[in-house]
Image (cartoon, rainbow, N blue to C red; front, side, top):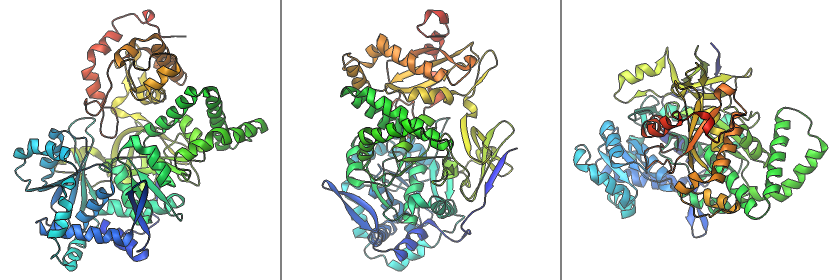
Length: 608
């Protein structure tokens, strides 16, 4: 059994809770700009001291409204400054937040609030409140609902004016490290969501150790980040808490369509993103260059960027011609992309899915080191992450300080340490099944290199076994195909079948630009585009490219392009945009069956 365990850098403090991190930050740098909020076309800073004052005022309001230490409070909202304000106000009031994805249906909201036993809920908008109202009659424990856009937070603050500072300080100090800090429900990609009990120590110890491990990212003077990933997910939630501990200025942009303008004005030094964001940045730049008649230049620049970064990572000498081309393209192409991201981004932390070497090397040559990491809700987000001083593109890095990672006999990744959750809420059976002798069983398959850098190859439950007995990890094929600009999502199928096939959806955002660049009507519907010969040829090209990295027995032999897209609303994606594979296999069973009804030789798929 291969195992790597890294000792914690910071001694554990069993008495510390998450609120202590803000207290320490205010004491160290009261006038440091800890947040910035949109103000006209610019941003207005909020200092650490100002933030804590607002936190305490809102905590008083919650106390006056009858929220007691240990009470569960639901929260459904987009990624804004108010999200973290509410988060810390609940910590100071001694309450436990139950975050709810802002895209959740009424039924999902009901499950989270019912299972957790929440006695109150804060909703951002009228839309959120309406969804909650649909199931309010089925939530007998729910005493209070507050709507932020209706001014309810201001009313709470006003109503809490008589609560003393001493009362909030008493509440703030009640929780110790072993106590529950939050109850985060899994995305439900494999069934009914389970509530993960994350403790104060999970966040405190992970923040303190990660801040030192990622010192160049979060502790450099002027460090700042713009959060746009949902803070209801543990990934962004952890980073928002880490930022307070490390003194990083944080801005928010909940509308990803406004991301580029926000990056241009906020000018962050590092980003937190999922691979799909980097794919979108790359694909948009490529299609924009294509539309301007500079597609050939962009592709040459991308090729040079990837070659240059690959040579540097492998410790090889960069040929003079490559150096010259790199310098030219840096002026013509790379500098413009850097500027589009605000001009100051040096690092980006990527998680939730494999990024792939191509994008990793491309952005590295732009001057943006993407630090891929790995983790789950059950590991308070990161278990491993590449570090600035030594990052290996294509891996998810070594274990963080205070964390141990090992591979079981079948290759399953198991984790233990400061980041591992306490239990599944009110679910002893699931908790027992999740652990192996104290190690959390992640369900992911991985491998280590000699230096302990982890590579994730797929989900254990998603491994396809063909009729010929070949084991195929879908991610190895799906990730490179998904990188194509017109591909929305892809699911590889073929369990107990004679060969591998794929279901493909088109990206409605990128498709019109690609169609126009290829002299096709840009207003083609998804249904018409799915049948278009040029579109099919482009998908075929993406599949042929993906097939080059696997054996013939693992290669995709047939595919079908669906005339609809998979979204969270359709029930096929989780809130973090991961595919719900089991739902897709059920809903598109007919399309899958059709792939195996017709002999493979009759399709347009190249088998050579």
